[in-house]
Length: 189
Image (spheres, one colour):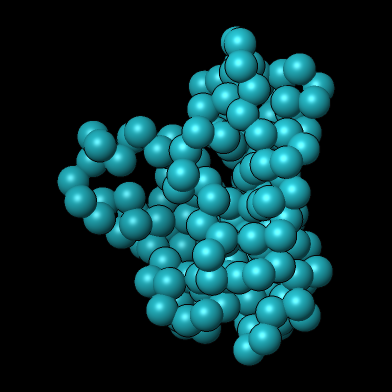
């Protein structure tokens, strides 16, 4: 699909396809039936809802809204793997995602687009909290796949960008527990 959705129903129908968009990082590491972007977004929103009360100054409702919006652009452009950014002009991925979110949610894009921009800019505490929970969900899912013996996942543990936990104590505690239980393994995982 291309161009703005003309009605709210068109937007809702297209949004149903988000569960068919795979998380590409898992595909590239041999997990053919990994989670979808919709599954990931749900789990991020749930993490945000469960952890927000543990963080002072977080508006939980706003944070959940940002979590639900944070990957909607992938509905139209796909989940580009991190290494793809090196092949694109600076800012191209973010601009394409922003335009995709605006087009998908065209019948009601103003408020949602403000939320998406907030998430992308990381200016609000809620946006930074959602971004930290996004990485936390990634590492929880990596832990699940690792326990199941699926995929080559050790590089996720070695990437410091996957652990943005300095600002939020509740997130840091869970990252610490994950590292303690499942941290980097040796061998072919």
